Image 1: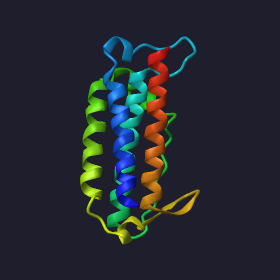
Image 2: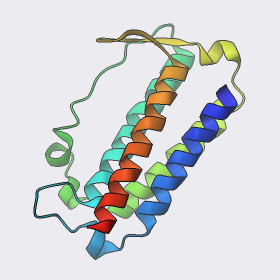
Image 3: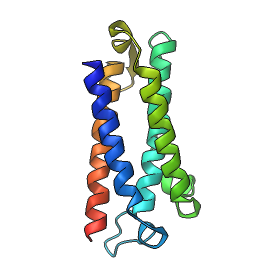
Image 4: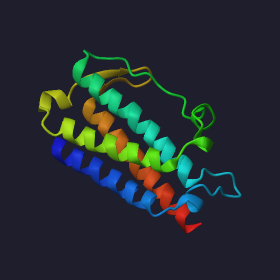
Length: 151
């Protein structure tokens, strides 16, 4: 299971990265008339999410039942300066974190995959569940980049 899950994580992240690399500075920063995020904002969001998620994975492996601290992603575009950030830096961060996560988690044991964290709404969640959520998150945002590219 863990090998397959990491493969899915890697594949979804690689899909997102490939789609992101199809943009250039003009197209990445183009905002839509309906107020949807630009590709750059989506890339910043995924970079910020991957930072949070990686911390959660590593905490689950190194702290006994650590609390998961939720984050308010609605504040991120303004508070974390999405407008002023370089989307290529965020993309490089996504690639780097993805490589780190896969490298760090590949050799862990079944018991470690079952390491738990405490989510304030969901209760106890395993590392497997956390990675599964990240897989879904990255795939959904890859689809979002596809939609932006078509528009």
